[in-house]
Image (cartoon, rainbow, N blue to C red; front, side):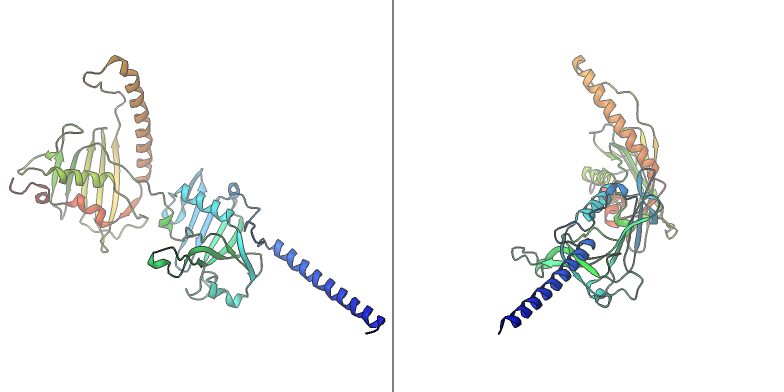
Length: 373
């Protein structure tokens, strides 16, 4: 090779290298602009304070969570209050997830990664659409959550972990072309079921003084006690009440939980069981239970009464303890009044409760009595 040929070869190498470097920086720029930089947050410019609405939709369901009058509500449940902790936790996690992998994936391959938009084709390959909007309704970001990525964990003994444990998720962000990112969290809370987002705190009938069951198709009974820690007994009629039966029934009422809020409860039956609980706080809870074909019950409740404003002195109360006892009473009264106010506000809705949770409240009288007495 002579000197002239060598110089031409070196020029060619420089030109090719420059072109490659230009292409490289072009790809890097596009990569950064896409918001899919490895190790960076998926949505670095988003702030949780800007979000006033969250919408999720999959192939079967849709839920819209909106901030109204400083309270998050579930639109598909008649504006029932949503679980603030769940919403804020999900949004914070969504804004904090980091990109661990990124590549361009054509639209024809989106169904394989469960990134197909809801309503486009069948259920197969459909992802979960997530939209974050501001108070004016403007969509701040729209993204499709797709297939969960698994990570092998040979130390995990659980059978369902043999193929790996959830470690991330494929995400397609609107406005970033065909760039599909795998983020550092599976975002398993991203479900489009309205019932998954309602606030699950329920009414709490505690310190019960009397509990009565009546209605069509039930064995009626009424149990009473004179003191909060006193012995339970039947209010009338024969038989001796088994103490464990009374405790089982009152505990079941105090620990009731619901699975979902019901908007259209016209499908209830005519066989309504009615429970009335009177408490030592001068409150009366009336609970109506309608059995459903699937074994669940539709529950309506109401709360009446006003807690006593003054404290009843305890026997042999020491004068040096009065101030502390008065303060404890005032604090408990404040919490109780706030709880009752919340319970009364939410009593306008109906609730679906599992039949298993209700069963102890519908015991027959003979089941509650001591055998042979």
